[in-house]
Length: 229
Image (cartoon, rainbow, N blue to C red; front, side, top):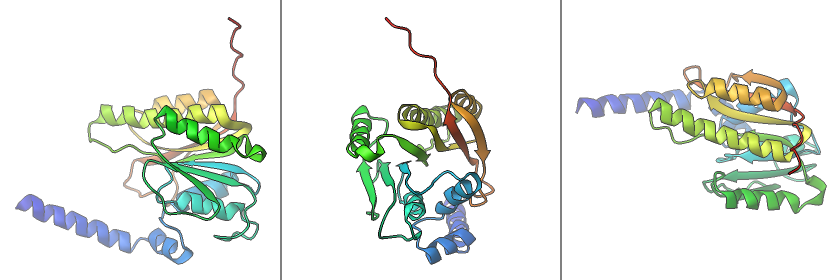
């Protein structure tokens, strides 16, 4: 019974913090589906990643706050609806409520067939055959076992990097969520091997007690050409 009482106290404390959270209130006021929009907003406003005319791919998009932010950045008037100067393709394993101007694919990014659908969706519009910005808020279900969680986190980020190498424009950028822990240093190394500029970022909207952080890679490094067989 003590465990249940403690659990109720923790849940009540979390709910109280959530309701009174500045970014939760701001998201409700400005029409964003989640406070996470302000994480991407701060990163983007600091580094100038998303511009009108861009093609943006949003990985791990549910509930849609990052796609909403990108959609407003690509709107000539900064509006949540109406004309769109650019393209947004979002993907998540969970269903997402529609966002005007955002093409959504439901599926597991780890499955080759889902990746193929994403690639086909991108290639269908000849005006946007390459991607300007990949934004990845993907995160695995954490087990509490450090080694297993580190491997799951690393796998998702590695997939996002692989996708970026294949589909980003040379000057494009990747924003990826990760967590401090066993997977962090190897992923920083991977980013530095892949991108010309790498910036670690802890947005103010990330909770102070969270190990969540972000890496931003900008400008693909030239890869050595494969030797002819």
